[in-house]
Image 1 (cartoon, rainbow over the protein chains, first blue to last red):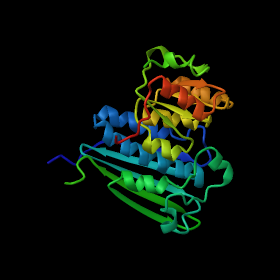
Image 2: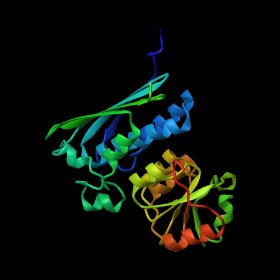
Image 3: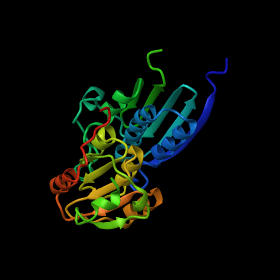
Length: 147
Length: 117
């Protein structure tokens, strides 16, 4: 069976603090997902989670690599950053909890919904964080999650 | 409803409008927290906000919102304008507050919409 063949691979660098192009990687991913032909509701949840992961790097980290593998019936995303790490993951998952500074919040970012949006929209989420080194986020999205 | 039909009622200035003639709107969403908008706004909506930095265009593209109404006459910088032109997103700017803008859109019959019903 060839069902687990990668259809498209995307790997992009994200630069911390670069709010000008923030969202570009997720935008590119959206276009690719549409081209592959996944249903809009599936694409939307992948894109929401991808955007939050991308923005976390822009807001909190120095740089990161955003890598996606698109299969026929699933999408795998890994976002690996060099940054401060997350001191308390449990707290970070609480809606409304954020360590973003005020000037970031004024722009409507860093409201403390990133991780919970990622959790709600993905079928599998794993976060590996090392203080002072960085954070790696791994997410999987299945076209038929109940399988 | 056509996006062109809401410009006058909103007393809005068209900041970016290359694609305005071909855009329709099915509903509306209002908010300034980007995580909230990306998660809850519905495709095809008009987005009423006071945020005007370039990332609002990214959110509009990701959600699939054709038009952003920037309220309180917030300054729209060149990066935002360029990004909207590139992505074909319409940007309207009005001196109305978000509440006033939503009231106008509501009186025109544009319903509030949310993803997942």
